[in-house]
Structure formats: C-alpha cells, structure tokens
Length: 371
Image (cartoon, rainbow, N blue to C red; front, side, top):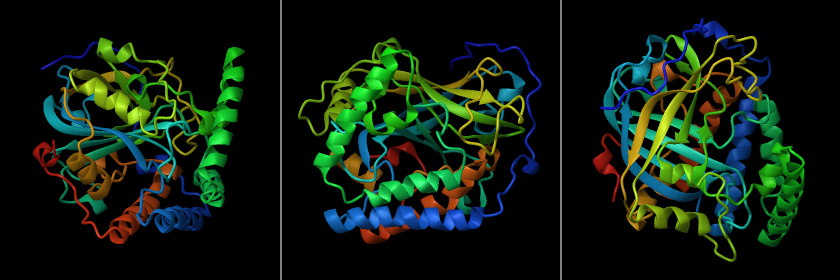
C-alpha cells in the first residue's frame, strides 16, 4: 500500500452544507431544454448512422481497467467518503473526445476522461441506491468555460444547429481553428473558444484531467483531478500525434502504448477554502491552486492490456453509462451545471439504450469488464 507524497499545510477548509447550493429561478426550464437538446443530438446522429451514440463524448479512444489504491496516512480533511480509509478498488477509464458523432481524429476537439470506480460501499444518492460504483467525469482543463447551464444550453443548441454539417465543413473549421490557436499561443495566450474547434493534436495519455465543477467531499467541497504519475506518461505530456489520414490515430496510440507498458496516474483533490472566491455555482471559475493545491489521495495502476478489444468496446460503449450522479452521497455533485446533468445525462442514457435495444448495466466487480 502506497502512502501520500504531499503533506499540505492545514487550512480552514469550507464546510459542506446544503446551503452552499443556490437554485436559479429558471433552472428547471433550462434543465428541461438542455435534456431535450441533448436528446435531439442523439436522435439526429441515430437517424444518420442507424445507431444511437452518446450526445457528448461519443467517440472513445481507450478503455482501460486497473486498480485504484487509496493512500494511507492522509491528512484528516482528505479522509472523506471513498477516501476515508486505505483500500483497493477496481477502476475503468474511458478516454474520449467531446462531439456527439464519430468524427475523424483530424477534427481535433477537447478530450474527456470518464472514470468508474467499482466495488464501492456506502450510502449512494437516491437514484444510485443499491449500486457499487462511483463515477467522476473529467475534461483536460481546470474550469468549465461557461458559468451555468443556461450558457451551456446555448452551446448545445449551437452544436445541434450544426449537427447535420458535413465532415468536410467540420474539418475546415477545425483546421482553421488550430492555426488560429497556434498563433494565439505563440504570443503567450490561450483561447478556450478556439480550442473547442481546434484542440492541439497531442497525446491523450499525457494530459491532466479535472472534474472542472465541484463535488461534495464528505464534510468539505472539492474538485478532483487525475494526472500522469509514471515517467512514461509524463514523457507524453504535450507530445504531438501525427494524425495524417488515420481516422482513429488517438485510439491506435493508446492501444500501441498498452500492448507492452503499464502506467500510473494519481487522483488528486482540491478542497474549497472560500466559497466566495472558489464558486460552487459558477462553473467558469477556476479555483486558485495557490489558495488550495491539488493533493494526492490515491493512485491508479493500469497494467499492460488490450486497451480496445471488441468485447470491451461493446461492453463499455454500448452497455455502460457514465454519470456524475452515479455517486456516493459523500461525493454528491454540486452546483447548477451538475444539477442540470442529473436530468440530461439520465435521459440521454435511457434514449441511447432503448434505441439500440441494449440493457443498462452497472458493474459490481472489475471481473465483469471484458479483457
């Protein structure tokens, strides 16, 4: 069993209470419209491909299974929920890109990492009672980009408007956006908007991923990240992937890596110290790491394996759902964007499984995940 590598100075961390969330007057209507828009995206691509995909993060690139080890000797504020005691759990990691259709990798968009921790005991949120999993959904940036579900709805509606655009048009936009983003970065800047359309073609395995928006963390409030820990992963940070004409270059890169290599990530927690500065409701606020650093609480060990076998792809992409509301009560999602996901993600999953005539599955052990 590993131990913590960081001993943070103790700070007056903010305490969780239901009052940290503040409901917006129109949010029920916004949530309904968002759920409807996400379903329309799935319906549009289902009509085109005769197959229903996820409304977001449809294209997976790597499906990894391994072990999550909770560190022992954690400082008291970090010993909460799933991380209250040292122990080992099964873990499934799904790497993806964010559109709701299966695009060539040359159309480069932000990357996602969905994590399902398996064999988790404890009290779950109401809709997840009787299950043994804890999901965390992450993207390779620290903040959400828009403040709330209303702004996110406008983005989804824009995606819906252009859902029927040809791949050649999407390729043109991506190519131009990547060139513009490179120009911005050359002068020391970074454009979140441009990266939505022209994300750099780098190796997914070298990226750091974050929940972007907060979860309850037992008595506290936290954002959670997963970051490369082993040297062979850190060497891949920022590494350019030659996409060329390879439709699935990102998948092939991950599969080739894990044919003969193992890897280690670290799961880290950033505790809220000041709700005024580190907003729960405004998802666009990036929490200061000077105010509260990300502290390691567990490591993820992934052995060499077939990272994209046909059996595993069908099981993970067709049968499983990833949802932040697959959660322990101690890690309940918080804030307006997370509340919006509660309805939208559940509805999207029901539509996808029904349209594809697939059962909805939630594993109880790592052994259920095919090799």
